[in-house]
Structures are given as C-alpha cells and as structure tokens.
Image 1 (cartoon, rainbow, N blue to C red):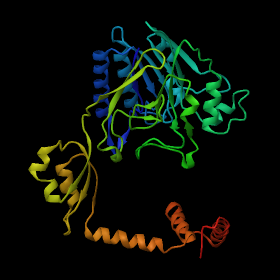
Image 2 (tube, helix red, strand yellow):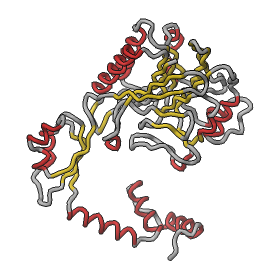
Image 3 (cartoon, rainbow, N blue to C red):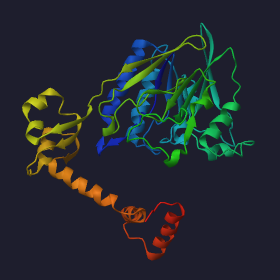
Image 4 (cartoon, rainbow, N blue to C red):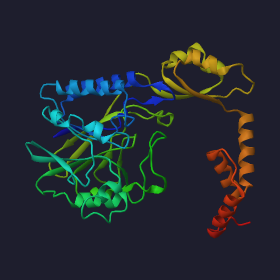
Length: 387
C-alpha cells in the first residue's frame, strides 16, 4: 500500500510580512499533480493545516479548493487528516461526516471525556488490512478528563495511555497519524525557528511509546527526518517557513507499506514558486547584474552586507533589486568588534544583573527593590551567583 505523508501546510502563514498564499496554492497544485502521477492509495495529513486557529477566508478557500480537487480525482486516495497545535479542532472538523462520504476523513478533536476513543480507518490491499489511527494534537489536560486516566501528567504519559487503550491486532498493519514532539532516548529532532516547542521539554514523547505501530506519520517538525532507529517519521513542511530553513530541500514523503516490517520511504522533491535564500556580500556585488542573473531575484532573501564603509540607504537599494527582501543587516570588522564588546560586558555581569537586564527587556521596566531581593534569595539558594 502506498501513502503520501504531508503535514504542516500552515495555510495563511506570512513570512516577515509577506503573504504566502500564492506560494501555497502553487505547492498544493504541485502535490495534486504528484498524486495524479504516482497514484497513492492514501494521503496522510498530520496536522497544522492552517497557520491560525481562526484562519482567514482566503486560507479556507485555498484548502477547500485542494480538497475539492482531491475528491475529483478518479479512484483517488483516501484522505486521513488530523489537526495540529495551530489548528482549531472544532473548525477543522466542520462537515467531516459529509467529507467522509467522499473518502476524506478529518478528525479535529483529540480524545477526551465525551469521546475517549482514538478513531480508526480501515484500508486493505493484497497483503491484508491496514488500520490507520487518527490522533489529533493533544495536551495532557485533555487526556486527564477521560475516566481512568486522571493520573496522566506528561505528554508521554498521555500517549502511552492512549496507545494502551488501542487494541492492535498482530495480523493487521497499523499506522498512526499524529502531531506531537517525539524524541529518541533524549535526542531531539532537528528543527527550525518557525516551530513552537514548549520550554523545558514538557512536550517530549519518547518514540518507544509508539513502537507498536508499523509507521507513525508525524507532523510538527518542518525538516523531513526519521526519529530514532524505528518507525517514526516527520515529513516536514512543503514550504520554507523561516530563514533558518534556507538551504533545506522540501518534499512529499512517499511510504510503501509491504508485509509487516517492510516499510520503504522516498522523498519526492517539491519546487517552490519562490525560494528562501540567504545571501552575503557587498551591496555592489549583490545588486550587480551578474549576481542577479545567477538566481531568481523574486525569491525571499535574507541579506548580510559586508561593506566596511558607510552606505547610503542600502535597504532601498536592496528592495529595488530583491522585491521580496525579508531582512538585511551589516556584518563587518566594526560590527564584529562591537558585538565582542557586548559579549565581554555581559560575561562580567553577575547572574542577578543578567536577570535584571532580561526582566527589563521583557517588561519594559526595572525590577523594584522587593523583586530584586526575592531574586537574590533565589539565585543564592540555587548557587547561581558565586560572588
């Protein structure tokens, strides 16, 4: 059985103020072309369909067109879709019973008090049955509402409790579609600046919690990668959603599920309407006809200028050359020296002084005397200030 695995569409997202709607229409049409060409049996969409829980009408229209085109493909794939942390489960589930009549199965709400079951779609091929379990993004608080799961404390506790409640049959191949943050023996996946991860690792789930599944189609991380030696894979986002993703190749993950234990994965490259690039050089170099002709100046670009002399309105010159300029900054001997001075000054500060600077940056005011006294006691209690 052949699957396409997608996630993190983030329809409606902006990149440094630029709308990506046209880029998203382009890439979704490219994915539709690949579906018609390669004929997968199912399309697994692992969350973050939209970039916001209340998506714009324009974003909804883009996804509506994508689903309509999918439904119109003769003998097209069964669609199995869950919500991500950016989605509203209620909004995504709207009309799901009608969609199911057209082989589009959408589960927006995670298991909870009213519906504790992990929903399942049964498929079949010449090797037998395949059970596809649809588990939307959840928080432990959702799962604690289920009778018998009141002791769930962490994301991993919640996942293990949910998996324990699923009766996996030995003669059926089992696939999980979900949107969570998986680690392997403490090792985290490689991620970008555009992903939201809880501080302190509160959302970590070790891959051993889902070891019983033949394949885990995961969403949440924007770089395609396997997690650990086993069965958990992030397909990544279909577009670059931050400058930190410049240089990454985006793709659709194609999964072929043979007999139990026989899983092959192939990345099918996607070509964006406009790429995201980092470029560096002097203003004269970067705006020269030779450099502009070497790549598409309509790409989204992040620029580092290396000129040593002061420049007159370099931003305006860059915008004329690169209409989708995301950001620019100067890095030369002077700025490096200034940065080194800042680092040296920070190294000389105590932990309490550094926290005071942080507090001022976050709140816009200085700590008062009482707050400073409390923090001093905390710092001394943990041994953070050796002075």
